[in-house]
Image 1 (cartoon, one colour):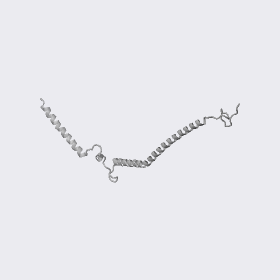
Image 2 (cartoon, one colour):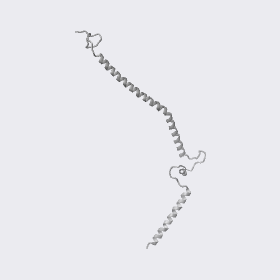
Image 3 (cartoon, rainbow, N blue to C red):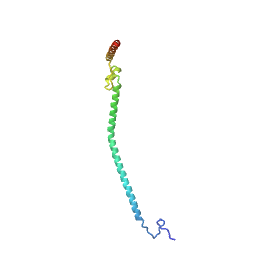
Length: 140
C-alpha cells in the first residue's frame, strides 16, 4: 500500500503529477476577469449615481427658494382675499361689496342698481298685465 503524500491531497500518489492545475488556473482567471468586469460595471453605475446626486444637491437650494417664494405668494394672496381692512389701520371694509373688489367671479349689483332693476321688473310686469287685459277683452 502506498503512503499518502505530504501535500495532504487525497487520491494523488507521491510520484504522480496531475495536469489539472493549468485548466484550474484558466478557470480561476476567467472567473476573476468576470468578477473584475462586474465590479467595473458597478463602479460606473455608482459614479453615475454620484453625479446625479451631486446635480440634485446643486439644484436643491433653487428648488427650496422657488417653493418658499410660491408659499409666500400664496400666503399673500390668501391674506388679500380674506382681508377685512383696506390697509390694516382703517375701518373694516364692507363685506357685501367684496365681490366687486375681486376680479374673478360675477359682479354683484349695488343697492341703487338693485332698486332700479326691481322697478324696471315691476314696470314690465304692469305692461304685460295691461296687454293681457286688452287681449282678454278683445275675445268674443
